[in-house]
Length: 278
Image 1 (tube, rainbow, N blue to C red):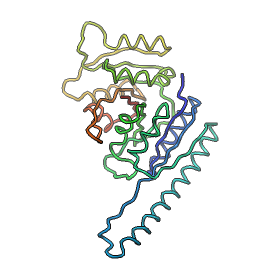
Image 2: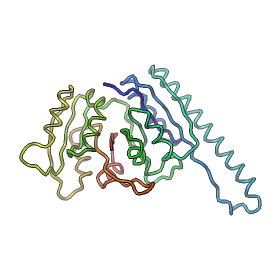
Image 3: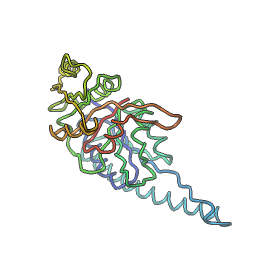
Image 4: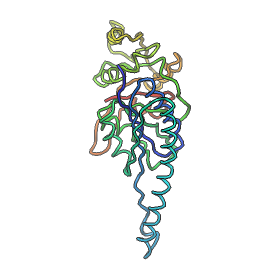
């Protein structure tokens, strides 16, 4: 079981190189077709700032912006072609002049998994809004791997932590992640604050994964004074997990996707790649 098509979102930011390295690594491991999608957000200057000359000035500014973005995209494409050529990975390059939140979920529907970067809260990036991971996972119907904005992740996942709650979303995440879980050296199924204390929570899903050839084991813990997200990330650090799998909980409000607290907190403080499914 492998990923056949991997979609990578590139936004022209300084983390594109690291995210590209990660996607090529994953595509190499799975012998997958890599689709690199570079988005260019529309540019709309404030009209009032230019008075009577607004139309001409704005047109010039927009053309300069597009030229700069296209030049940057061309350089990234050259890097992607070189890396994929060296790794014998098939690359498909795409460029879209549209908002990433609108276009990435559409492209992700035709991939086995999408890769996006973790938004850095202290930065404003026109091609990468803070809501992008949520919009993709909730709008595409496909799993999403979010890569942290700090650190480099150039090796396949070896120790995977599954945040297990027994819900539909967690079940979906586990099965979406099977291509990664089957290749990992170890899989830890963690249940936090389980309601049923009569048997080991996660034991059934761990046994199910074992039948798929995964080296899985179940564990449980209780969070009292700290959040579920902090418990999860702390446990991941303690056991040396380099990848997390979890369900994305949330609901839609018109065009805004609202995530549950634990999912939102993990996305804000994650230190290893996280696969989310809804």
